[in-house]
Amino acid sequence: MSGRAAAEKSGAMTGTNEFKLTQGPEDSVSAVKFSPSSAQFLLVSSWDCTVRLFDVGANSMRMKYQHPAPVLDCAFYDPAHAWSGGLDNQLKTHDLNTDQDTIVGTHDAPIRCVEYCPEVNVMVTGSWDMSVRLWDPRTPCNAGTFTQPEKVYTLSVAGDRLIVGTAGRRVLVWDLRNMGYVQQRRESSLKYQTRCIRAFPNKQVRHTQTNLIHNTFATGGSDGFVNIWDPFNKKRLCQFHRYPTSIASLAFSTDGSLLAIASSYMQEQGDVSHPADAVFIRQVTDAETKPK
Image (tube, rainbow, N blue to C red; front, side, top):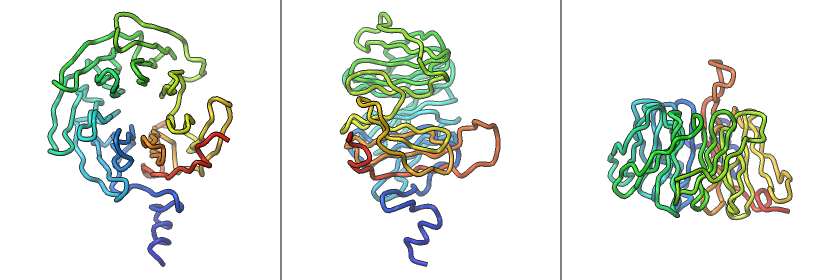
């Protein structure tokens, strides 16, 4: 059997334009995030209490660091620093060059979301303690705590706008330069609890992962399918093959050339046997992501 055939049989290779990362997490994947400067590096956080840094081009894990409990989200501050939080309530920053941890601060309950806002140079965390906290990454230290109406499930940053999705299907829009009051409140028009919100470059609110090159977006669900959508013409551009289990997280690289796809069972049916957790890297083509 040729190397290629062996890779395909093992599932490492799923086609000419897609492969599975080796040395992936040993439990559910909570988030995948590409480096802000390069399509080469990807952070992956997991319920196995790790955050892993992958060199996507070489399909190798460069390093991993631990939390005492499952990690629910991670983000790059810059190419050399990862931030992460989870069920231990601790916000950590990790220097990817020196492999050193710093505990920046804590929430009063698990940290569900970690995002960076370059326009305001602030890290933003959202927690089940019903608060959003801002952090100055240079010090690093806490730069303010802002009460939300319910547990925070999702965050998105667009320019200086912060969009927060909470329990009770609530969506709030804040201005990161003036957190004195909420700019907008609305109830989600979706029937089910919102688990992921993303803002379009024109700052509209949607539930998605956006390809900034073509202003299209990808969605993934517990059916194992990933769809690419053209939001302005309100139509689906394509659907990829079915992945082994639920799509837990998606991320486009900044240049729009790659899509990281976390195929990871999210306990929707309780503790049942399920396919292994995996992260796939797909080279996306203009034919798949460019509006027709």
